[in-house]
Image 1 (spheres, rainbow, N blue to C red):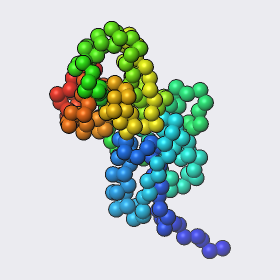
Image 2: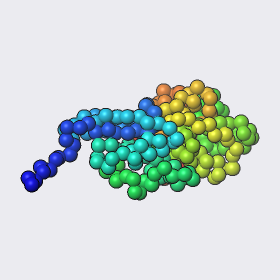
Image 3: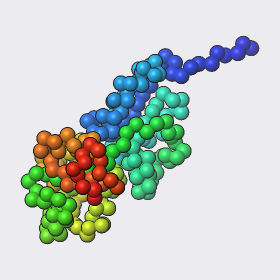
Image 4: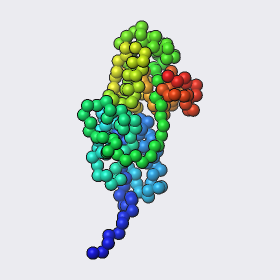
Length: 222
């Protein structure tokens, strides 16, 4: 029997990169930048496929169920790989078993942004306003169990405020909710938030990081 020639990877097949969130959000932007550069290394086309829903778990589940041949990749984040599997009762996938980590491609921190019409211009002012108006402020998230949801719930726990959760399908929709005034605040990823902060569409009160970030050194830490 003649030995079969070993096939190099990838071989005459496009590589699919699944982004488990809607177009326009921070994970989607990172994935599309990556997809532009990967063909130079792989020598094959990389196709981005958005499969949004359930805080990113639908897209992650589809990759977990795909053939483990390296032709289906996941552009995951802390929500899909850590938070959602930890806080949901019915796990559709086990990140530690379903995925093999390849590379870290970006680092984001949540920036607390508010609608410009809100009188609060600092975190202490926001806390005071929320305590004086329990249940009257809405906060957006990128979905139930998403890291942006967890950040706001931790904020509620630490400050004792009563604010109402309004989940969206992704970060870009949640930002749009703040811009339109449907929600008053949102813990947006820095890559998605700062462009709107610079033009005054939203007001940034602080960043959820241990230290100030280089892209917005004027923002205090929360």
